[in-house]
Structures are given as C-alpha cells and as structure tokens.
Length: 63
Image 1 (cartoon, helix red, strand yellow):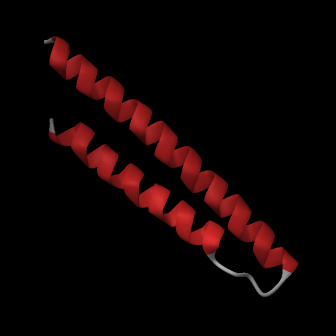
Image 2 (cartoon, one colour; image 1 turned 90 degrees about the vertical axis):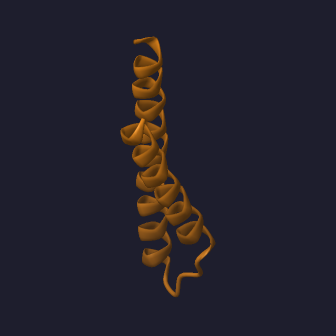
Image 3 (cartoon, one colour; image 1 turned 30 degrees about the vertical axis):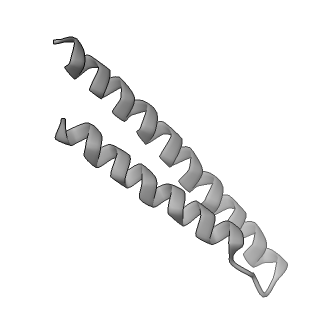
C-alpha cells in the first residue's frame, strides 16, 4: 500500500510543478518554450506515475 501512495504523492508534486510552470510569466520567448517543454514532461511524468500506481494498487488488491 505504501508504494502506490508514494507514487501518487510524487505524481501530485509533478502535477503541481506543471501548473506552476504553465502559470509562470517568462521574460523571453525562449523561456516560454523552456517552460512549456518542462511542463509537458512533468505532466507526462504525473500521468505515467498515476497509471503505474493504479496498476500496482490493483495488483495488491487482487492478492
């Protein structure tokens, strides 16, 4: 039970980082693209970690 919970907490941190980067103002156009790329990677990490946590939880629930 602790591994899926830890994965979900890290996913929430990644999702929070995504929101912060999307809402942050950037002084240059290059910084805008850097923020978008980093936010996309954090969002993908959050989605993947959530899926892995759900799968791990469902495997634990079956046994």
